[in-house]
Length: 500
Image (cartoon, rainbow, N blue to C red):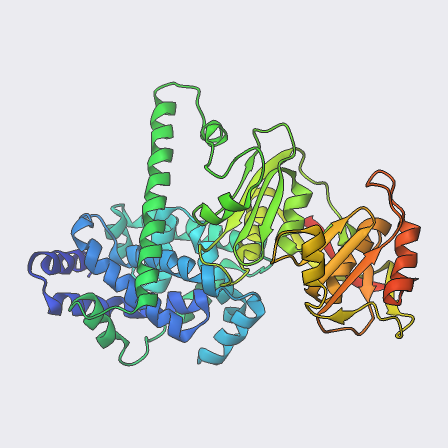
């Protein structure tokens, strides 16, 4: 049947045969749809990904070689399409994905599969091409050892050993993710659950868009473009690695690590810059810095982050959105400084899942994870001490007068300087970083002030080398009616530790 797949591909390429393509769709649509559904946890999006994958097959059919194992090729292409889709739709919590899988899979005992499903495709992606193909054929496509041996062009006994070794590698990947099951249990669960019947009617839709040239929706077209970019990038990476192997075989001393260290990316500049963040293509990467001076960090909650010459601790804190006063380190941190970028979309205000992507890269590169834990510590509680102080004004009532005297910017939101902190149309939360920075202790807002206000503080302070924190505290009380109350209480902290 696997040789027949390529025969059908050739027939479709030569004559644009709809029956040949329909046979391929019918044969493999369950594999593609199930894989997509597992990875994105969204039935509608999984259908779009399935359409995109078969459209890509129609477009790339002529380039598939005679040794191509189509099931493995489709599985890998689904991975690319799903990865691109997840840049805008990735679930923030694996718990949600597990709940979705549990509600949609109709199996008598889903406990093991519920553990494996959210992790399966990431773990498969870490395997080598031959190992992944062997597992797809054995447990996704239910092929015999003889069929696998024919597809991989090896003897049957070698194919059986390859499957066993690949399964053990997969089990090791699950262990790293906290799932400790035997290889036999994993094999049984994957074989029983990994491929489900695609929704009724989806094959007809796929045929209409992929083989018959019907109009493609914009979201599906976006998935196709994203998947093709990832496929092209992966091909480039493979070419680079192959070139390195050739150089090594020729007796040179260059290594893969040296090539990576010598490469400079377009976003690696001496100082982090918002313009570069906005203009650079989506990418998630951490590389050893080539710069001597700290180049700072710029972050946009909707688009991503770039940091230059930063310690690992800072990278982790940006990935988990917790900073020094709310971070506990329970492991040795890697030495050195790194440049890093995390950007998963060129569009603003889509999502903030670059944080998840950066967390995954930190785990892969350094073996570090962060988790949130309630830890009792010293804090300052910000409370209303005098509600009669008229320090908070209606939003935008002060902006014009401050703009005329202090700035030419009509979009001014916050002004700060020695002895001055002015806020326009903002919540009380904008005040907390100022207080925490001065007193070096977490500040908890218990004012109950939830609206947006204009307010400003002024106190006697010469410059940043002569800070007057006592004056700031008194200004808070006199001008805004707010007091700082020291106490001890549990707060959410970021705990950095080694991957178990």
